[in-house]
Image (cartoon, rainbow, N blue to C red; front, side, top):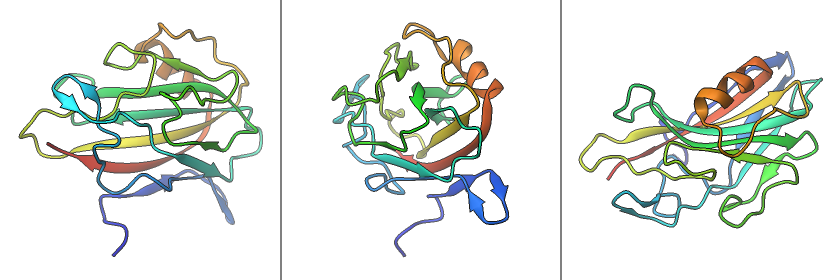
Length: 176
């Protein structure tokens, strides 16, 4: 079986015949050293996966992408990537887009929980059960969120939620 139960596709229903969806040609049910963070005791390549989405709802003016670990041993989980102001004409991010500076013009990365305005891959504590990493794309009703790279999830995620028309997610696991 190519996809495991842990690899779930979710999305908001838009109409009877279309569903906003997120996919990836590089993301697997279990993350690898390619995505693992470089630092905090981890020695991965810290490559953001290729992501692509389709069937955005009518009225979409931009997109945002987040990566979140709800299993991190903090009171708020762990935000690995927050990317906003992706133009509505863009429906694809290449692998390693963050580190390679191959982001769409106008897109803004804001601070993750590593304190960096970039993709920060998984680095769960050794011996923990595998953590869930939820990759989500949001279709937004605004072209531009008023954010800067030094803002963190407490400032940016509420803005994303306020302007979300639909969202679609993929979940992968990772443990060490």
